[in-house]
Length: 83
Image (cartoon, rainbow, N blue to C red; front, side, top):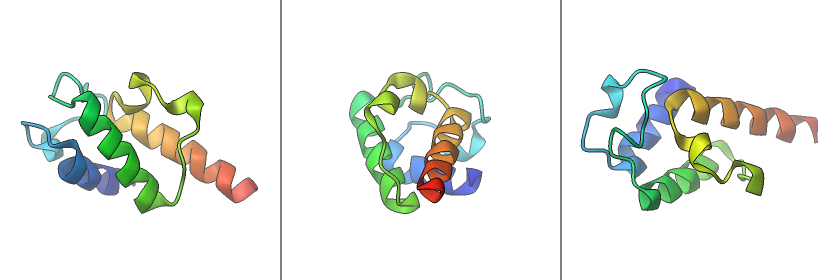
């Protein structure tokens, strides 16, 4: 899942640094992620994983790092499978 998320960050995040070089806990906003890019990132993640971000995840924390994105996506996939 990490590689998929990184690929989405490369495409939608438009960071001024190479996303592939970031650690899982690196702050994506410090790396250059803008509010607009975070929305694009969210939409791309929803498309790729077939999930929808509920309001509780529409915050800066959810997109702060590769690890936080992976945790949210994992939870959403689990919820989808349980439904």
